[in-house]
Length: 425
Image 1: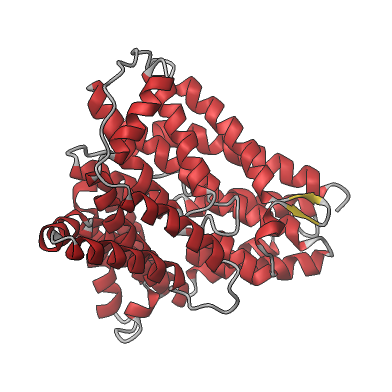
Image 2: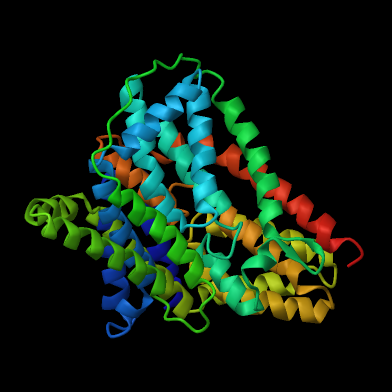
């Protein structure tokens, strides 16, 4: 059964990389094969889907649809264009903007907020939005590890290691993950600036767009605040963040109904939800759940735990870079969930501070998702938005930007975590 699951998994990811237009169909077909072959019990298949992520995407897509209709993204694009002399600087500004939001909002939600702005900027300048949206996606993944609420992996670490929101800033008198990620962001942004050196087109200022309604913008701000506040609630349901996003969407739709425009707005919102991306993620969740169930991810975890033969630096290095490779092709949520107890056990056996290996895991697994277009939900979402605009992005085109960006960020984090937590271990 394990061998069959691995074969299907390998074929699935080759097809996902080779045929971006039918990624959702491939993922759903692979999930159905897992169910038909008994790798995943039919009664348990839906349980493998991360409904929190699905609800967050759906709710945020709906809010963002209303947000775009108000003209606010276009206005933000105008303001960015006014402050940036070239397309190169505009893309860097958008990536930094995406990172700043993603430190406090789920990566996928960040992409859904910022990518439309990047697309609008590109349209105003008559250039392709592909590079801008890729930059937004990978910057959101990078900053997702910065705070407790930035990414699902951070939330899982906080729950497992009993870390609160402030522990990500300072813990045991040392800088926490937030500052380590910021150092990585500086290095990665420098690399991004270099890679974009040929994008020297001057920005043409545009007349500022008039905003017709500020309420959807307030809904987005409310979403950020509520997601942060929800991180402090103990023992909350797993789908809390998703319910927050969907509830705020319902509030927005009810307001439109009260204004007498409900039918048309609801229709527009339903059309704008990217069902292709939702199907792709749903299929991948089931496939990865099946791999976890048959023991593939456990086998990887055991392999890591048995390496090093007592050498802390070797174990630390393996955890970081193997996590980068694995998360480049496998969704990092089940991987991190499996590895957290393994990492804790390894730390206990070696007699080292667990945060050293916890941070190694998060640096590798969260930032490593940037390597490929299917390594993180945010990347899949960004490419889904580009597809709706008529741009099909291949793996090679994506990785020209993502690989140097990721290596710069991970290497910086790898060195800093060891200097802060590993010396003397």
